[in-house]
Image (cartoon, rainbow, N blue to C red; front, side):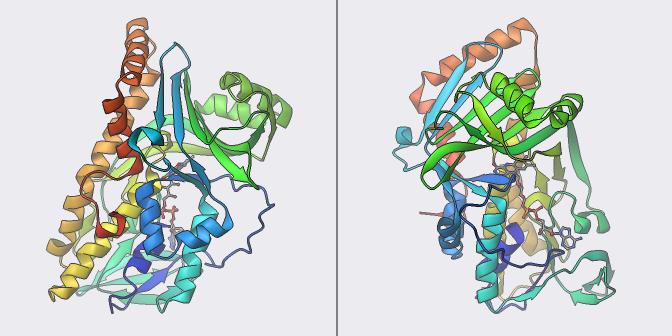
Amino acid sequence: MVGSALALALRDSGLNILLLDGSPMTVKPFDAQAPFEPRVSALSAASQRILERLGAWEGIARRRSSPYSDMHVWDGSGTGQIHFSAASVHAEGLGHIVENRVVQDALLDCLHDSDLGLLASARLEQMRRSGDDWLLTLADGRTLRAPLVIAADGANSAVRRLTGVATREWDYLHHAIVTSVRSANPHQMTAWQRFTDNGPLAFLPLERDGQQDWCSIVWSTTPSEAERLMALDDDSFCRELERAFEGRLGPVLSADPRLCVPLRQRHAKRYVAEGLALIGDAAHTIHPLAGQGVNLGFLDAAVLAEVLLQATERGERLADVKVLSRFERRRMPHNLALMAAMEGFERLFQANPLPVRWLRNAGLKWVDQMPEAKALFVREALGLTGDLPALAKA
Ligand SMILES: Cc1cc2nc3c(=O)[nH]c(=O)nc-3n(C[C@H](O)[C@H](O)[C@H](O)COP(=O)(O)OP(=O)(O)OC[C@H]3O[C@@H](n4cnc5c(N)ncnc54)[C@H](O)[C@@H]3O)c2cc1C
């Protein structure tokens, strides 16, 4: 998603760009009646703007996207709760829940319509310096030479490993179970998140044919509990899920096949080196409780494109680490601040001593009664604060 967005943002730059990916890069025919894909993202207003300007939003809207306008968060071991609404900041919505496959296909449509170079089913295996260039070797033995490599190859980035970029990692000792479920009561275009003793459980609203009875769930829990939940038959899983969710949307009627993903938060110590930049999950993998991973990635892509376009206009050498550092200076503080906040949340809600639980519940109730403070949170979630690239500005 993030690499495609960067390539599209640079399509009119006159630069010689090749986007290579290990996948076949084919667009799947869309079937509106097909089950939801288990991997979804909550796209912020800033991501929507970026995708609109890249020409990809239309392909998302034409396929399937689910707007949401409210968010309810509550503490499962107390009475604290907080409600955020788009109306509080006079915004149309808080964002859209979109299947990752839909985002990828809409971006691929635009890539196939462009003059950008695409190399599908091309798995990078080796990479080393050769003079001022990088020499890349693919799994099928082909070699490529490039002065500048942008790594958008995800959380387990091969480029990051092959170039020896150091990372800071936090293992949450948590797994996330992801799937789509149907509930008896409508989701009311609301994202729901309950903090349980084992981790956060999110119900994200999905819409199909105007029906509001499907949600994508992200259930973070301990590895042993995840193993037990994955082994349950569908009926037992639905009953356990309903109990963990306090039946907020009535009985859980059915569940699609489940996926289990180990959770790690990871941050590259540097995003850039001579002839190299890391963007998206290759640079930072954040806990999904924030629902911000790919939103940060799209902002990375938009800022890096802006930096490279300005440098091209000035006739600067794009592979120069001084040029690439402008991107790092603009994105790293923002990404780090959000990751630190998520780390804080995670710890706060994992802490079980009575005084901490009491404070956290009192804090939630207190903030819930402060419209100005909540409006700040909402603007942050919309992604419309801070140093925005032109692609994300109103
Ligand atoms: C349970 C869960 C829930 C989430 N929910 C949200 C959410 O609500 N909102 C949100 O914003 N984010 C969310 N995220 C995070 C989001 O999914 C990621 O941030 C996003 O997928 C990262 O996109 P990317 O393009 O950087 O990397 P990826 O999507 O991982 O893409 C990497 C690309 O690199 C290619 N590649 C990898 N290795 C090689 C190689 N060696 N050679 C060639 N190509 C290669 C792959 O084929 C792929 O196309 C969630 C994550 C999880 C685990």
